[in-house]
Amino acid sequence: MPPDALFDVPTPLPPVGQLLLLAGEYTRHNDSVDLGSTGQDQSIHSRSAERLASETTAAITAVVGLRLFHHADLTAALVRLRQVAYLADAASRHGPRLARELTSFAPEAVVDSAARIAAHMRRRRSGHALEPDDRLDAVQQAALHEIALGHVVSTSSLNREYLHSTGARVSLGALRAVKSHGFVERSPGSAPAAFDGGPRQDRVRLTLDGATALATVITTPSASRDAPAVTLARPAPGFATRPASSRSSAPGR
Image 1 (cartoon, rainbow, N blue to C red):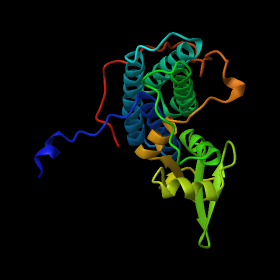
Image 2: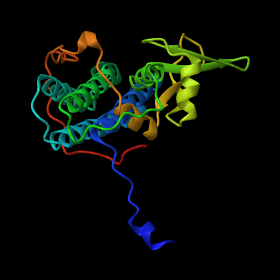
Image 3: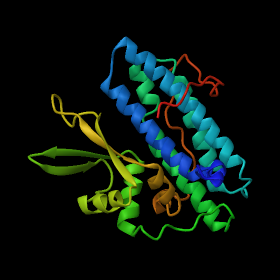
Image 4: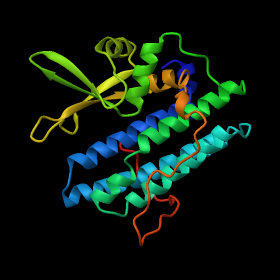
């Protein structure tokens, strides 16, 4: 091994990239809850929610550690992330049905927060802002954004591939382009079927490189650019949420 290899430490993923990967973990968690219903699954889902709450709290700490200038978008992003952490922690203590409701909008909330933080850093010409990845055109950026939101699944039939998105349309051409850069991957059979009795679908996810690339160009939709933070879910009467505790388990990646 070359002597220099001992000091070849990978560059840490910037906070915006971390948030994009975290959104993918929430999508993975939600898919898992949708696919499982046994007592053993509930225990696994509870530990998963605990881990996600802990990781969300860690992501908040990383953003605060950047010491960015105060701005309404930054405040909204941090408030929304704290809501996500509270709700994930609450989800760890409830059955599948309520737990699933509590994390339903977490992927969208985390991606929106990441976009607000990235836009704020670029607007302020922060030293933390990254140079845009010039491999991505507008169509590919939009495709990665939809994938980060957890909106895209893939199926195949008679040797043909089909894409389905619950948000903006993503073309097969755009998917193949970002896949050629190693920005996305398919997770076979990880998403619920499109209809009762149908086959499971393949969730399309960002890779580490994909999250890194999207973090350099992600923007907020103009319609929600100035929107205030909103409550993601209302707790059921009779129970209170509390901040994410120090409980955590080893990441399941």
